[in-house]
Length: 308
Image 1 (cartoon, one colour):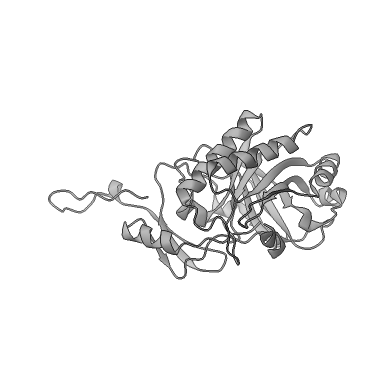
Image 2: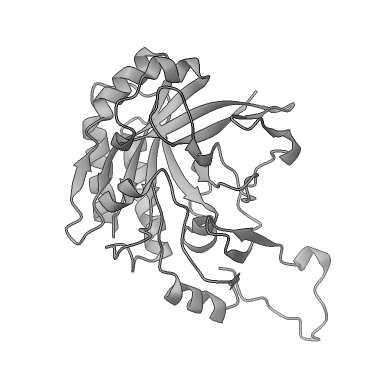
């Protein structure tokens, strides 16, 4: 899974109303997995007192500095009403191969997310590596004008192999919807292809931007992306599945209305040493260059935070 977002217009608008400043080129998104898949597919104005006096400490805006996958720097306001995570940075322990986390409140486990690009997977070997769950691509919408929806040809093979090996399974859909109608179409596609299957983990909505090509979603606003996400998640929830949203810090700062998706579980992608987001997340995709026995080539590895 990959990202590209043309933020020129959006950035200019946000800057003009004082919502956010970005240091450096406003590249969009996080790259995921590999280039093959990509080829496939407000802050309120601050009221001043009449006397012009300084704000109290409680009125001060808290800001976040962060970097994207290219090392470009950004700054955004931390939204005070959006739920924050309470993970301790020092409890994330990386041994050079795998990441773990444990404190008084949380424990963790590792998983992978895969698509047809990983080819044939030996799920027994993956399980033996200590991988306990898998999030499988079930389908994707092409990013060209036609926007055709496609089924991942390895999905049935992967879900059978992963579950037989004892892994818990969720699915994701690589989305390129430009409106709510298309988002609902994407949800219905997923629901239809899950008939007869039981999931242990959520159905993930994965709206992404395309890094190195013109895409049908280039002019979709953050407001529209948020609406699409809510429509998809509502549909899969009504069908009996748990919805989840794939995100990263750029999308949380510049695309999603976080106040609208605050109640949804988040699968957060960030390849820095520690997650940069202040907001809640249940899964963290911490690398897209993982090495796992049983999977050829680099693979995304995720840590799930589990409340004790």
